[in-house]
Length: 125
Length: 125
Image (cartoon, rainbow over all chains, first blue to last red; front, side, top):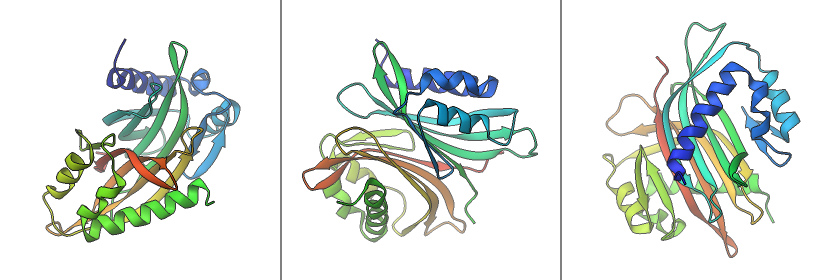
């Protein structure tokens, strides 16, 4: 079986490729227990989370991952995934920095996203 | 009992106040199982973690928290804490942006840091 850092890498690539292609297709990664905090706003459950992602005020988006760290987060195979990167949105001339943290939990042979927290990171004054 | 967001706020204030005052005093927050990933480098256990924090190439430092998000991370009362902010280091004219993720786990009436991941966030090009 792949180790946690391999799983984290595969997850991050799949997650952002899918996000940038069609956010709706992220639905199978979430469950009714999943939590998303997007720029301070909390959402729970697949429908609420995917609705929020769909309603973001941009259609075209591209994530560029700059750093990716992972750690085991419990004894049951859960994985903490910590990303920093840049977000290129259609209407903006300049990319924005962001940071995002996920906790992946085992679900049979696969993983679901249990925790998801996203923030834009503004340059320090 | 305080809810997870209150605990996260208290933790973050205590953690950075202590870090900026005397990093050695963070030792009781870590255990032999605790993991730190600091700018890609992994450390495990109180001694390794505190040694790394002590060996950072600055003496005077001040953290300014910009955003703080928290979510429950399991059924046992663990808490995921996600911070973005600015770091002011003695030798630098300008603050640097950073992001940091912790997982706090219950330890009797208190909490310990099980996961800790830190990254500087550079402005997107």
